[in-house]
Image (cartoon, rainbow, N blue to C red; front, side, top):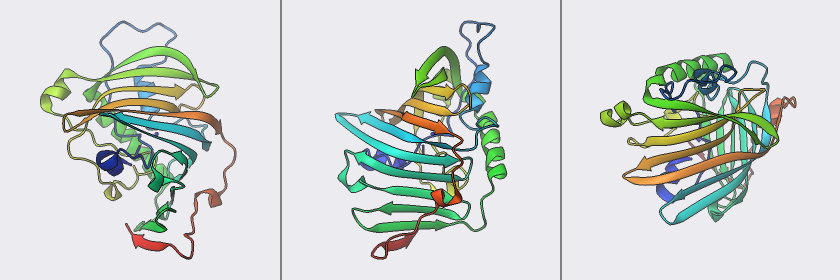
Length: 265
């Protein structure tokens, strides 16, 4: 679900895109799992590669991040069709300059639009992104990061009227000793990481993720990360969510208004 949005988090605690993807886990060395519990590694991989029956996701999500004495929150409308098509619109926000902001991506590239400043930024792909290729890259990413975190299955919880499996994640001691810095990408950016500017030193020290039982899709995440010694807590949670509604290609297209200033990104 990140991605995210992190330049704004660093500079003004403003979230612009969903976080997801580049967080790493490893099997927990704690209590033995119950026989009927889902495999923690399989659930972890679901945060990168969703269930085979998932065609699209729509819903409204609340995002909140707290650091120091500040709390920033947003409500966003989200449409997603794995693994390239994504649309997000800010419905409510504590940051006036982000009111109504839109992010739209598809195989040809991506748009960022900020109504308050009439600014539209465009990234055009050198060649069309392919969903199968992105899926493969995300699966490899999941495997690559397995050794960095300890993971524990916490049970079942209902989120947005959906049954979910809850995973608790902690940065392991070896990763801390080695000074592991975790690159935070986003669900919609993972196919084009060259367009994302992430901080060089960012440690995700705690994470909890709620994975939908039917579609293996994360519907809530809580994350604690450190930037320059400062701790931030971020939570993003679907308030309403629906799956496989048959979203049209037009859902992920964007045409900037005539009066918008257009920049390349």
